[in-house]
Image (cartoon, rainbow, N blue to C red):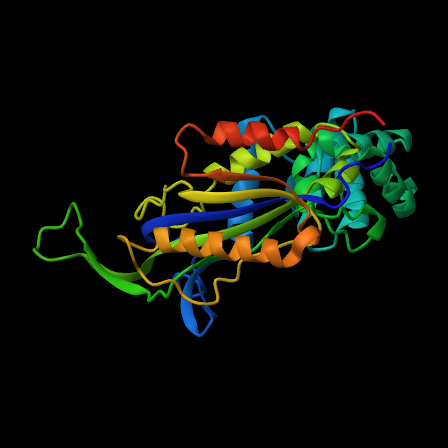
Length: 346
């Protein structure tokens, strides 16, 4: 079937404000920052937020793949289930794992592990009979992202040993940046020992934090997703991804600096053509009670101007605004976006 969604993207332009938090720490435990437009901004790495989105998807009915260095152990267990001895399972697991990865995290599915165990069974669990080329050929044949690897279809997979097993990512995440200048602050704290007999603190220390209104940009390539999923379960994938995007928050210091603020505002566009991201090069100044309202204004001005400049090349199919109309909930947005992932007959 022809890829009807080729070059079609959903773009999420999200504004999300947090009070005192340290959502993503650097190597010394301080909130990450970036220099943009000559001013220091708060930053949360794309990897940090992306992982939380991926994990959150399982709360919406998605069976995740495994991103692990323990491919050998997973395959080992699959071989044991099919009757291999402990020694055979260990040897086969190691041989198959080496064909897929050396010492890096590998995106792996239970479907693949079961298929490899069946292959090993055909070889009487003799690891000497297991061939790397046959493993690669089998892996390409049995990979079923719609079944238990939707996260691989969305976030991609790179296999250094076998380029044919690579999966192109359908979604792109930018680092979340504050729309305004930020200076990290330091909290000095003390802790008491419950069993202490003397007066005074038993421990003292410090930790850095900040407060920011973040701009988050995420692009979801529906054409790429269609290609990887073979044209199946696209509306379900878009729904789960959007819900996870809404609820997921980086996990750093959640118990001491709870960061649970939801989206405050978002422009979500369905477009065909070049991707569009807002640089927020000029730092927003506080106005109307904070950074959110002037950030919304700057976002609307920038997107409106770029749409006019791009003319017919902007390729807008639909536009949704979240956060202004209280009758348009995240469920309404999810429902609307899912319809754009529906594929009809030729």
